Structures are given as C-alpha cells and as structure tokens.
Amino acid sequence: MRDYWIVTGKSPIVYRYIDWFLIVPLQMIEFYLILVAAGIALSTSVFWRLLIGTLIILLGGYSGEVGWLSPGLGFVIGMTG
Image 1: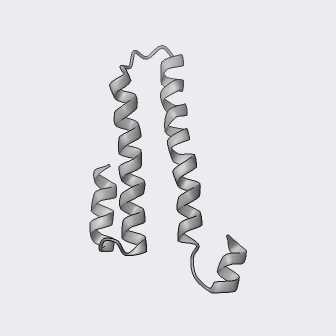
Image 2 (image 1 turned 120 degrees about the horizontal axis):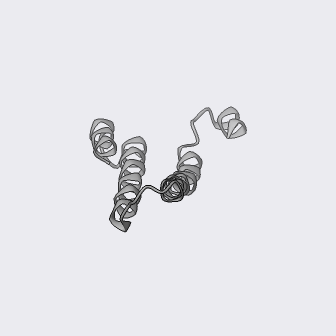
C-alpha cells in the first residue's frame, strides 16, 4: 500500500477496505469462538448481531470515505454498527 501512495499520492481506500472486509469479520468470528470455548453461554443470535454490526461499521466507513454518503453520515452509520 505504501508504494501505491508514493506513486499516486492518494490513500489506497479500496485496498484498505478489501483487507478490512476480510480481516474484521474473521476477528469477530474468532472472538465469538473464544467466548464459547471459555464456557460463556452465548446464543447464535449474538453471533449474527456481531457479524451484522461489523458489516454495518465497515459499510458506513467505506461509504463515507469514497463519497457515496457525506463523511459525517458515514461516521454516524459506522458508529451505529
């Protein structure tokens, strides 16, 4: 990503969010599995709420950064997630 910035002078938003759309949901799944392995009784609805919240955070941030929404609205949507 550094080379992209050096060549273009712009932040590689798309590359960053592709990385985050892969890594962040996997981290959320790992967090859920660690809680289950620790013996904490969780329902599957907790898993789905975590996953949907994670995706809302990422979609709100991306939408604000690329200009689909105003940056403020993208921030608010991300914080809602």
